[in-house]
Image (cartoon, rainbow, N blue to C red; front, side, top):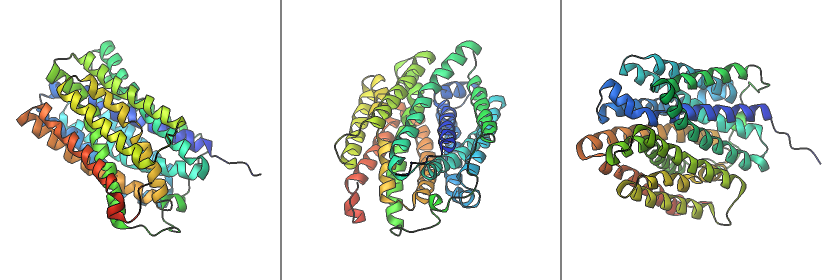
Length: 385
């Protein structure tokens, strides 16, 4: 019997890359209220900071297929990590808000390149039977790093009395990983099967790819909207302090990490479709309670959201086995532009109607994802797994 060969250096590098990238991504929400104060911004003006990263993610998520085909997943990933390093130090040093927007855009480059290449690298490094386990582990790393990000912000804010220190630490982590990558035994060439440039399976249908991408982008919009606005919402609507509001952010990611860790080892005996619908329904109910009853329930949405993204990636691997790289690139790009729209609309609605009313966007996108899954077979002529 032949042994299962797993390229562990590539797996470790991908895991560390997601960990550091999500730390950098998720420190923005806890410091957002301080950014508004420091630069004397309205919520609409401040939303451009988030929108810049989302726009960068859209542009470079779409363009990621080119370096994937030319240089492979690892080199594409390294470009993304270098951009992450630069973005964090720009945001650490910038005395003007325009610099924050530039840093956010470069962070978007990292989100686009790393977001696509990490999945392709894992697919290329891990045999098919073990792939689902490693993908679940990958997304658990996101939950862990997202949990630590607000704690990092709180510790550094108390020690330095400044919100900028967390960007400095995230930049150092990115630089450290980039240096480490040149000492690991990593594959550097393109992988045609992983990048989706060789189509040996069912021909991909553009409508179905777009339909699936809309499900993912609607969910991403919901998750990012909640995670990036819990702190400022609890301060504005319920009078929480900076410290206590960031504990709610930490609690959101505690639930997110715990839920994903459980699902990495336990698979419920239900269809993926059923699990996905229950996950979204629970998140939407909890969100309503969080907005109108107590912000704790907004943190609790993390528990219900936890299984959804890994479930959706498992569905993608089953629905598009020979086109995972192409579908991932499209989903990252579509998610980027969707989140740009969400951040801008949320800022406008907050300034005109209040932050509680603005969370109706979360309900709309969550309900959209739920309905798209429910009617998947009707519109695509094959069942959602």
